[in-house]
Image 1 (cartoon, rainbow, N blue to C red):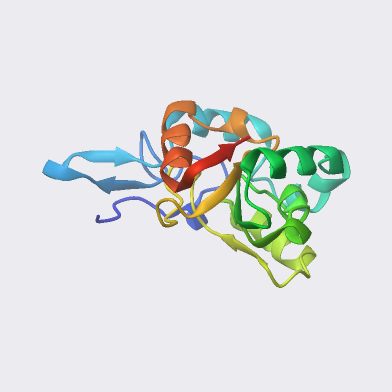
Image 2: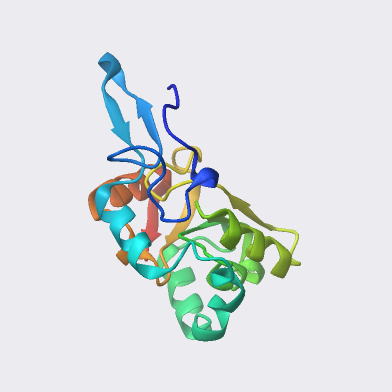
Length: 178
């Protein structure tokens, strides 16, 4: 697909990019434009301060870490021991992403905001954790490659239908979305 708008890493300060409808778009089948970030997400980001300079530096101070009992329960529900891959959609500064490092072979944080992703990378020392610049509804990950897909304190930023479709695509049979 051909990019016709700024990439996730090229969001403008107001979160709008240069397009009237989308921050990033691709040309789908038949040459129709398909937005990667919807108007819903653009408005939420614009109102939040998410792209404001310094936002990522203070973000973790006001977010709780996932409780260990939650990690244990989700690991059991996923039914794979040990977990091979956990994908954390809307990973932000990596607070919830890093929590999975000791429970899986690989953790992949999906985050479109370059400042949040940079903060995550700087705060992450675990070798099995990596971050990908992408939107939650188009991760670029292989189909059926994740045991568990999480969306920790980020689902409200996303269009539910496309994100759930992507989660179903990247989950292995019997995998869990939480």
